[in-house]
Image 1 (cartoon, rainbow, N blue to C red):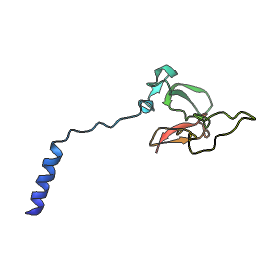
Image 2 (cartoon, rainbow, N blue to C red):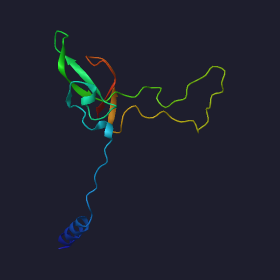
Image 3 (cartoon, rainbow, N blue to C red):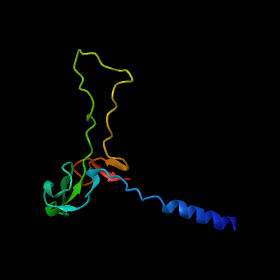
Image 4 (cartoon, helix red, strand yellow):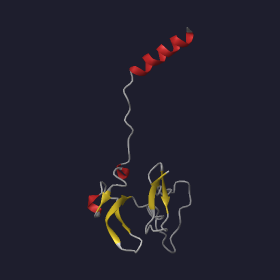
Length: 118
């Protein structure tokens, strides 16, 4: 009896709430779609990565991928002779990929560092 009452109470509590739409990073929309050039990808940060066959000949179609940000992105350049700020106020570099994505280094047929889903 108590379990039935608790289930009805839980059901009534969830009906009143509108479903929340999960916000998505615009850079990750359209990853993996086929493309022929960079402008075919949905975000300007994405690149059209061409595949090649076993003989090394590039295929006509490619995939939209998101390159990882460089290690130096968002950091201040070091000038010889200038003081270096080592306080806690110094900015940490931004992440190389969006949340829930990891940076896969170049190699094994991939020419650039790309962000892949975890």
